[in-house]
Amino acid sequence: MINHHDFMLEGGRVGILLIHGLTGTPTEMRGVGREFNRAGYTVYGMQLAGHCGDDDDLIATTWKDWYQSVIDAAEKLRRQVDYLFVGGLSMGAVLALKYASDHPNQVQGVLVYGATFRMDGWTVPTLSRLIAPWFLTLVDILHIGRHRVFNEAPPYGIRNEQLRRKIAQSMLGGDSGAAGLPGNPWPSLSQLVYLTRNVRHALPKVVAPCLILHAENDDIAHHRNGELVRDNVSGPVEMVLLKNSYHMITIDNDRRELVSRSIHFIRQHVPPAQPFAQAVVEQTTPAQPFAQAVVEPTTPVAAMLTELNTPIHHA
Image (cartoon, rainbow, N blue to C red; front, side, top):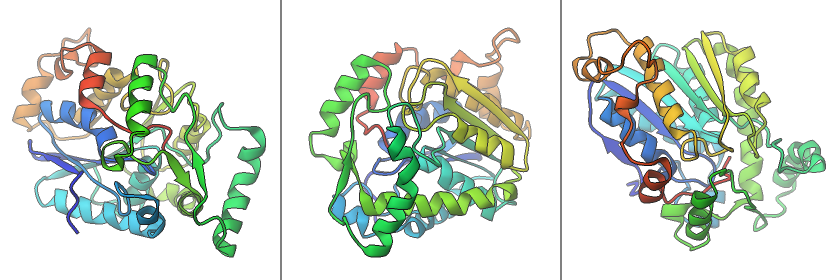
């Protein structure tokens, strides 16, 4: 199958696989992917099976299909690079951890952005938090609610109000390839429950270093989701709470910090003989551990509005 919405950015021998969230698209990873590529890395922003189409396309797939997409994409990228980092946003972070647990000898590090094991952020009603896992399991067992959808709602995972308005307009415009679906079908949320249960048990098998970045005020997934990863993986962990974003941290106000911390993390876990990336690194002074040299010299909002046309509130 040809995916028309994924992207490959050629760079050096360090590769970064980026995985979008449930009902999302590779577009939500494109901005950070470009900045990683400017730092000298080869970046592949993959498309998950069933995504970038309509609701029927998505509910025709299961979490195992989504994970197979990750396996296939990782194999494609590994043919071009010597070192592989896997990263994802929301459900994409869960899939990245799944891959790292199953392929411990192939992953140099994991970028865990807003991992979503449970939707328990401050916009999610308490009753929904409590009953959702059991209800969604029942939905799958009884094959009910096939065409029911949990619609997106403000603030859509976006703290930046200007960006939020732009993205809400795009998301509701009907182009799922660019902006994703405006809601989460019940059957797909059921599959997310099965995926997270599987990965939660597999976390101790993750031996690669993990960088966990999570919004302190995540509206969809409380930062206890990141703490779950921190407390259960076996490899070294760095966890940072971002102060000025909601769930969609790859496109919100803290995107520059996310990029800089990620590059610093990758640099720490790759042997130094990477000439192009090293040239960028040398632009950073000791007083500036998180290099601004790798970030586009545009204002955060302007850059995001011009580069990104992406869904929000995605798992």
